[in-house]
Image (tube, rainbow, N blue to C red; front, side, top):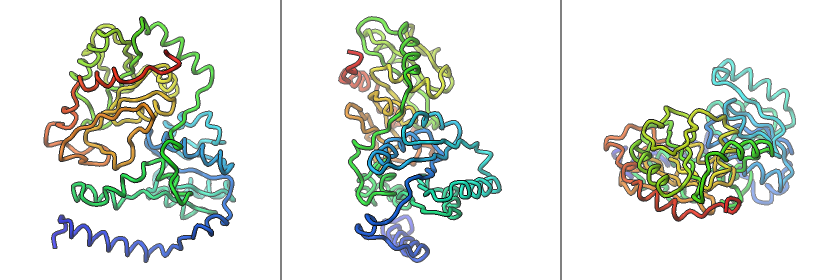
Length: 377
């Protein structure tokens, strides 16, 4: 039996499942038991990173607050904490630095939180060793979301032949919801929600006003990517911007990275590295759409109700990160080698063929199809 074969992967998967069942020996409660089980009304939510993952928790927490009257303290990396500001269900955000998460620092943090939040439950929406250590030390109810780690690995190793349907069944917010609910709610009920204060909206409106002229759409571009293989070609971004400006649209560049202003045509407004996380959200709220790759700002746009045109190459719908807004448009590559990794970090031996196959003309057509936001009509 070869480990790389479908039969080999299936056998290993069966053994892993059996071992996991023996190790955990967990009793799965019936529906009636779940209904009668006493659960706390306050929870510590653990989702340390990344930006998109943290953003995708917001709609789920709002649902639990609305339907269960639950309230939350949220533990995350300090750079992502601003996303959670003004959330009506979150009483407190604990922002930590990466250097605080060393083995010794993590143990101190776990013991401190467990002691200070006695009586609260813990919702592990990260599913890493760090969050599981915190769960092991917690002095109350602990719920974990189904991360499907083994299924994802098997899907990759089998080149998409194993667990495709299972992984496609639930997106990430639905998987978060399954930590608590026996049946995943509809995707439309778990869309991310970022709450902006009135002064944030007004400041963004005044900031963007000088950049808007004529009757064209206001199109934000996010041309940056944490992983090179998820990045669209600079010349593609330049071609897209040139076509949009020529058609009378207003084009803004947003995000963090090495500025691409030098390859952009005149008439493009470059806000690269010029906005905070909250300012970015507020400015996105003033735009008719965002064009981006698979990125954190893709979910920020969804959180403020701005439709996205999302370009997907090495990553895939099975990972559960596709935007789900009613007007969102997904443009994806049709390459047999995708997905090649979970986050697009694996070096591409084909010259980023998947991203190169998404042409600027396809994006222009999507911009033309995208309706103008009602408040900007």
